Length: 389
Ligand SMILES: Cc1ncc(COP(=O)(O)O)c(C=O)c1O
Image 1 (cartoon, protein in one colour):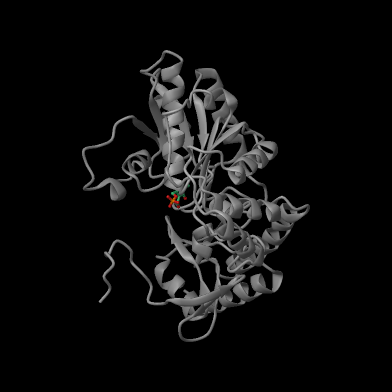
Image 2 (cartoon, protein in one colour; image 1 turned 90 degrees about the horizontal axis):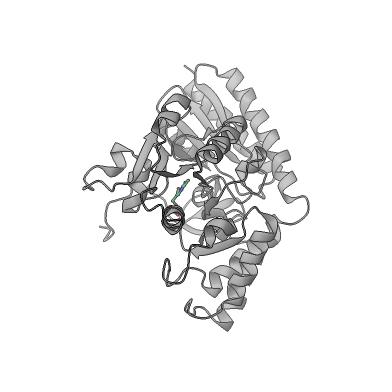
């Protein structure tokens, strides 16, 4: 009997080790892991560079308070600002902390400008920004908020893709619009580039901040460092997490100077956020992702992957409704409930994970190799054959 609480519906497998794209269970044959901790292990399991980064730092200093200068964090922040829209960064430990910090920054920005009533955040209904008490009310999902009242105020919602409802929901109290450029948990739903550009225009016109939650779709996952880069927009605030730590817990909120300037001492903090080990690992992850050709290679391999999946879709038009996503953030939307399909993939040694709207989420490491993609295609095709409707 497990002493753990039952808040997860766990599959009955445990792993003794991982290597690259593969996981080795405590008994039985290895699995091709296209979950990778839900888009977390950006460089696969047991990456030697990341192991070195952890070990080296562990021998020096693990943790010091943010009351002191942390050189590894200074370095990571500088590199992120040199390569992105951001001028300043606050480090956290997880995605939900990063989105919470983003919300705080937006509110504090208008407070500091003498507009304390401009404090509401406009989000997509049934989006996902994490599991803290504020983040669940940001999502506006009944399932996530049920039983966690009283309602946390300050959030308004519009329907994904419904521009009328978006425009209607903006008031003079709206401080920021917060969206995921690609809704991960919601079913790998991509906001088209022209829509993101339109959002930016609306924000400029109404003098509201644009928060783009790149916790799942960011850090190279789509073949650009940020998913929003395809659209050319410049956000004000971007929370990230998952892939930046390659499996080590890191969160961060990236900001322009304009908004970051309001975060004066005492406005936000985290005991462990930005600790030396996390920062050293983050730097090692960036060493790989910023390598020449790394992102281009993701674009190339993912194009091949999408093409192969679309061929399967063509052969099984009654089973697969749509191949969704950008780069290596991939969703296979089925016409049927996806849980049996995911189970069958697992029986055939391919690990995937669900998302909303009957979607099977496929999240390989960013350095996935072509033969591994081919192996997954072979397994998916086999399972489709068994499912033929
Ligand atoms: C878009 C998005 N935001 C925030 C979060 C929350 O991240 P974490 O689980 O690290 O708190 C997630 C997690 O899946 C996410 O996909």
